[in-house]
Image 1 (cartoon, rainbow, N blue to C red):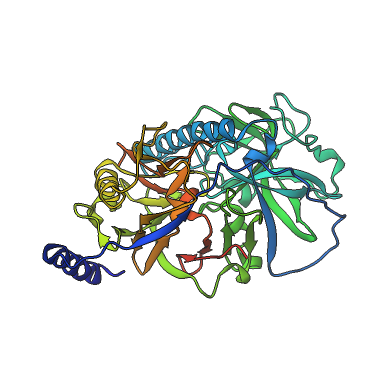
Image 2 (tube, helix red, strand yellow; image 1 turned 120 degrees about the horizontal axis):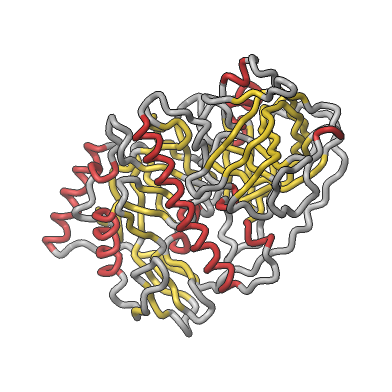
Length: 461
């Protein structure tokens, strides 16, 4: 919704409320329990050389690597990962902003893949050795663990050995690709470019910067610049490495922009209500015809993240009072703003914006039985014994795109006893984050050439 129209809408809604003519808009929430982890069963055949202009891949949630845990345990772990990710993200942004324009983007260029939520199966090298890699819009550099390991964490697959690949090539220290790392190193032994990525949680990966072939099902993508990590320490778990989907110049979408036309999208399913897989698409077919687009905003201090312009939020069909666009504005110094992030689960809003939203939702849901607070959630309800309830609608108003959330994207189960909580949280930081719970069911399209992000409802088909 454009800002002028938003002000008109706000004025009309207030007048309707004053006259008593306003009817709260509601949505039906079908009640589900916490999702059970699914078993990984993807079968892969030896790839053939193809030149498809699009890639379609299934995504798995990180819970699939912990099938021995209960749904309650997995949910607690998810919230713990989420808190650590948000903390690391804020540390990263503060470090970049404080260091000024000369800061090296390779020092803190992403978020630890242990905090990533979704991963896929990717073939590395020739012949292709398949490994699990986290996909993350909050990171740029592509990397994976490599033998020999000075120090490696435990991963599901065998560690990749570059000496067994016909297409692996170290990047020379003086090569243009090496200079894309803002602070590259150089091995005295073999004059190969070296990279180091450090994360806000203290984790890091260090090794040789190289080019290699990646295989996505039957599609080979050649000469992808990636880090071959021989020393990987910190909070990494399960997956072999990370496929960075950020806006920086070494991310996978930017590197492969000519082939896939600088477009990709993903759709994350609500795992408590659907057995369909989540998916990611690269190429022109990634952009849905039904998508509503909002422009991307550039942060002059930080090129990794996808910043959007959020103008306001409606609850029950009325704009939330006290929640203005100024609370979400990105200033010239790189402070504030709103990012959309695949690896953060729960949407964080600046504290004043969250309190206004929460209070409006509480009023609209006053007919529901309240329950105690749960973890970071301060607005919870006891819906035990019910099969569905009516809840007020929630709409996010981005510039040019009104995103009406399904009820399952903002009132979620937190146990298997009927407790549901409002899935937003406040932050003392000026940064707001649109998390993946609120993105569920939408195909989120990233058009880097057009500098825009699209939301297509019911996009996981």
